[in-house]
Length: 281
Ligand SMILES: [Zn+2]
Image (cartoon, rainbow, N blue to C red):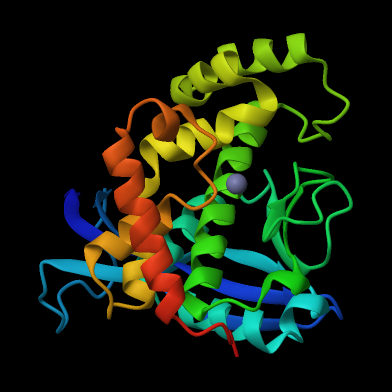
């Protein structure tokens, strides 16, 4: 009897799908998640080992899961939103967020829709707190008379909100609605968790304030990368100015920037908007 060992290479993949509100599911793409090696040993060599292969290792492919993004018909049937989403999906920073987002399949699904928020009808879009395992980003159809790049900016901003909620969700054992959770229960959950950054911002700014403060301090680089990949024709000043949109109610903006810096970004944004198309389609 002999022991025969060899290295087996496993390639990991994930299939990505979209599910529409009518129940149909469409394949989007397959994502390569890297490879791992394992030593496999047999007490007896596999039969036929004297045969022709001769390679030092073998490989096999493994599809680790299916991921779903729920696309409501209100979103899919909107030419502006659909085209921005399709184009953004080609950009690596958007892809990375979507991947992170659904890392733990059971925690929450992402849903994209269009509609006017009752509580915030003037917003470009809102990301709704998790409910029944769904984190929904709802775009305001009355706020689409902007450039495609600005809609993409809104998308990445809201995706970061969704990612923050996903992290919170992963801290909650049952995935239940957050609305019914007392603040003390929230605090307890977060203090037990693996997200000290979120916990820090949450304790300082509360449930409604922590996301923008955290985003302004730590996520503007991601926003800049995402919109630059979406449209690379502008200068860095414009990307930086766009990344601040929606975040000027934060301490990062009001306290950490000088008046000269705020003026610089405000002027850059005005310049961009004066020249940009207001026709998303
Ligand atoms: Zn926001």
